[in-house]
Length: 334
Image (cartoon, rainbow, N blue to C red; front, top):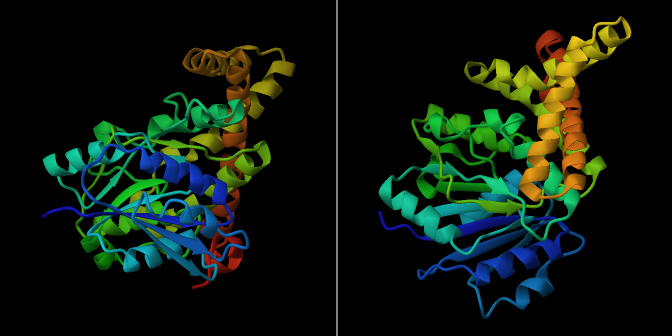
């Protein structure tokens, strides 16, 4: 099959981010034609004027629709797209010059109907964004259990950097109305339909993620809330590793209590772990301040996710509440 790519990018009140993404696309080294589908999801601050400045440089299709959430907006974009293979991006990413070459080359050598790629922090990102990126991607944190080459076939792509064939989209009906969590839900449904997923480690994007501690906490807390819902929908995919942030926070509380009782071993072990986080982030970004902020980012990530996970597990699995009724803010009405 000859692959014709269409990028699918939902956007909500982020014209500056779209500008940076499109600037990176202008610089991409790829000789074949590709389409960029931008879906304005009910924004009050649209990207129309920004997109106009790129119309003579890139093949852009631009649509404005009422706000129905990122998942439904991606589905809308894929229905409108002209290509037969969709690359789904968040609006807050920047593409390396060789992104499309790397993705295309991998698909030509081993075609899959759905892939995911990793993310990293760009040199231009703030220290806080780099610290958050380290927290989310490091092998010392949850980045080490989110899937790597040894889990090919069962890698769960994330929608900030995700490829999906038109065939797989039509077979699965695309994303559901939960957010966040719409991407692992789609992946699991694809597996049930017999489609393979994989990680293309070379197809990396630079991902800004959140730009404040408060927004980062809200994001990871929602990640924790949706996981027990996904486990209820797809119980065969539930793993002990999803409990790790909650278990970690329980251990941290235990270590603090036992420290006051004169048992120092547990708090020392905790200190060693955070020492590795500090050193690892400091070496990677060559800044002590980023090392310090990375420790804080890990604490916020584990606390926010762990708290959300336990809360959702209590209501969904123990009290048997209906997810759509108990956590209305996690669902978009179509």
